[in-house]
Image 1 (spheres, helix red, strand yellow):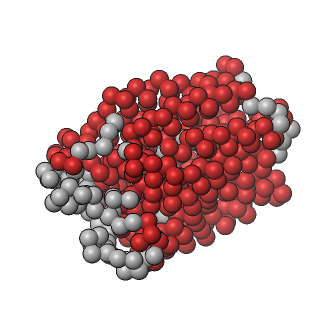
Image 2 (tube, rainbow, N blue to C red):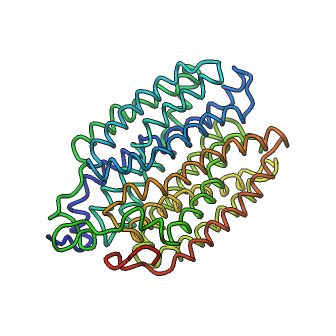
Length: 415
């Protein structure tokens, strides 16, 4: 096996797949629905007369179905390779998301649209893309995954602006087919050109052994150890705290007395926070013990929740709160992808990551409807933001129990 050691070697060999994965993540099911729904929630509520809990239930159904299927897509990536799984899922995601133009005024029909989107879209998320990138990079895996996950930052900066312009020009329904052009006409062509997994001779040291076999433990072995459950619990808590805050951020901004245009701009600030978290945390992961980096990073969004409480028209509080929430999202996605590879290896990464993605997706899916229910019943978001403060703190603290990185060649169930 040829060892691609050093920064230049890893980035020279993996630059094109990394660029394609970045764009694929940006145009996939992970960021796009979460950056369009905040802008159409208000118009949908006005047109259909639905409360915000009912509207949020769409992304809840989407997330739960995606979560349940994540291990399936991860297993398919392990068996058949990432490229066909990711690109086919991305294509179907674009087609289905564009068809949301025809959302019916029926709650059942509305939820069915989201269910189909979750079933086909999960393969276009980091569940698939991160497997290939983690195989191209080892020494600089944290930074590479951070760069790949900048796709969500790119989406958060660009998609709300595109969607808002489409809404202004043609109503809320127009946001869906316009945004669907991104995966269909940008991400898929680039993926066909540049995205693939490395050959055995291209894998860096630590990914494969001397015979070319990929290093790592099985899902059964991972589940048999305490680290898996510590990581899963941390992911669930943090995802629950963040998911609803992101979906409802436009409404939270509106409660502070600002317009829809300002709300879209705050989503852009969230994107900057995500971008900063991705790069800074990924860079630090490569140099220090990752849980020790993640814990203080996840303390920041607890402060964000406090800043976003109330209804005072203080734009600086809203902007800082949005930035810190984004920083949390940047940290959390890096945590899943990086620590899954570091603690469990790459041999069965897709299946293990898929199972770990389940609490992330379920927490993110349940959270928006809970945020909506609290807003509907209390008239504001203060109570749920207080709960989110505690869950951010608990999720970060749990990571400290993971301990040092294991020797994957010697690791066995329960060690």
